[in-house]
Image 1 (cartoon, rainbow, N blue to C red):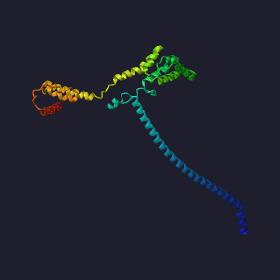
Image 2: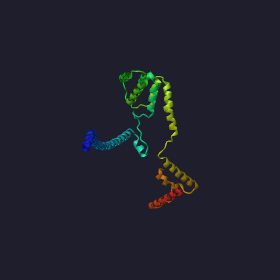
Image 3: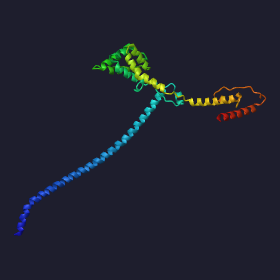
Image 4: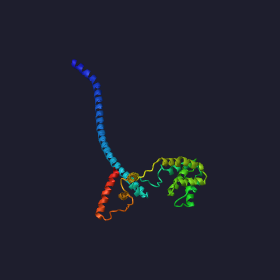
Length: 291
């Protein structure tokens, strides 16, 4: 009797236990799926780490290649600067900086600043101004007309006079190998735009003039000249005081002075004795000057 009651009780609990088993099995399957996904993600992470390492190595190689190209560019630029300089040997000898006489791409020189001022204030007079600019080598009227027409067609909307003027003056500087600020000023004088000339003089020429006044020109031979002057002054003082005679001063021919050939009463001395006398007096004179 008791066995039958237990059996009935178990039969009642069996559906509930079966549902719990199904839920547990579902969770086991879910965890298995997540485990497989985790393994796949780990493999993908390792693959990506390997690709990142390859990318870093490639980046280092490209950076080194870029640095080599940059160094080669700097070397070529220095060679170009040297070829554009006529007084290169003197500058190398005195360890002076080498500058390019004319570089059309620079944006920090006086000519570019003057061009920027003209472009800002010239307005619709830019085409008339372009006709007054010089060209070397000479540029024909037909070519200049094509330049103006091309710029007009390029800028045909709104207030674009500043852009047109900048384009025209950039073209002028590129084709005129001897371009300078004075050319702009002469062209502005011809179209009577003295207001722009005043702006150029106030913002470009005047600051440069003041800078040149404040800068002291350094002669690389200044120290050598001053040292020679001090020696000569001491020599003249000793001659005036009678410490040495004028006939001893020919030793200074080694410093650039012409040798003095004073008369001597010792003409009967042999050549050897005269040379020994010269050497001893030269040594004594140098010691006296150093004192």
